[in-house]
Image (cartoon, rainbow, N blue to C red; front, top):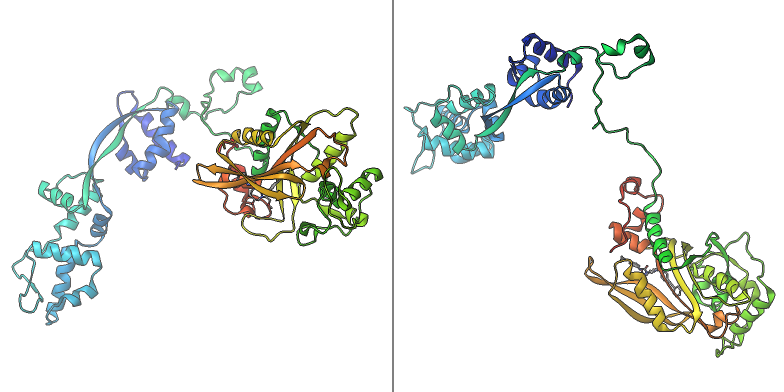
Length: 509
Ligand code: FB9
């Protein structure tokens, strides 16, 4: 809490009036003179002037009596025993028997309890054995010495001058006041008082240099601790911070990022190329967003399309296929991709077109869209993370091995695999990890070996296997940043403050 210039001015003038370096002002009296609180004087003025060497401070520790909140209420009114006595007197003077319930109505709970206790202890009142009525002790010297003592302490800033020690003991025992250390300051003139008195220049100008005026001007000392003006800047969305961490993990493991810059995909690459049958439930509008314009995609290379038709209809490569009439029109329907595996199928097809097959490690992290029922952890879109390895003689062991490698880099080393089914992989494994923080097993992803019906029609050589796994970006991000509802993380309800203040992401769960 800073004090205004005039107060500073007034203080510096009275220090200057000391006229020598040994005389000093006493902070409590200065505070009173300036009409401000002692704390405001010290924190709002003395500390900064001392920092500027305009004054020199010498702390003096005193003890003073600090009045408790309860004590303050009595200092502002009366002591509880006097309040109690006066209330009894009022009723008795009205010629009634003063019964407890009558008092209870008239006094606050704390005053009632304390007042009765003290008035009885000080024998100002008594309780009639028979009727339990309160009786006045007419010879009692009823004085409000307690409230007077509290007011004295208050007015003397906690100095006990003039108060008998047993009263102080009483106040202490009744937790109405207690002795607390209190620091005041001797205020001496500082070695740079003169500068502080002179209008301090805040910058060295060309004129000062040319005029030589700089020699006589007092410069405002640099406040190197001054906080700079907070610069506002862009902030990475929390999801993108975590995405960056996953990208680094993949790059560390020698993976190459796949181009995912097309949210609109044809059903062909998203489903058919992955050997997902056209009547699969995921392919109807309940799960997938279909485009009305452009409704249809162009056909990829015809030859490959026919191979896909054949494998769906008749099988091949050891598969008996699905034995249904495959529709080219259905395959050409445009959708919002439901998984980045659609990008994997495009890249694997391109890989198969290479003259010489070269092993590949690819990854993708980008948005996918599913027309799902929305709940706290599901939006109609999320970010899928996918990794795949295409190489000769790969086995399920390699899949589990590389998944262990991957999750270890996220600090998850306790994994379990649960057989599951995906239309485009066999075998398929759900990935579960034991989460130390949550003290439970969490499903952290899915994986499998791409089916021959998917990769052979593309032209991927017989002895090449493609293993892959996937997970979401939102789930780890929610757990990493303790976000309970996905709407706080993604979408129009995002709390921008959290985005700005979220710490950088260290992916160790
Ligand atoms: O992310 C998921 N869970 C997860 C991941 C990390 C994590 O980190 C925490 C710090 C510990 C926590 C949780 N899941 C996948 C599992 C579940 O959340 C699941 O209920 C939801 N899944 C999404 C799909 O929902 C319909 C997450 C999303 C998902 C599922 C499967 C794949 C990708 C994303 C895949 C795949 C795949 C399989 C084979 C071949 C290629 C790709």
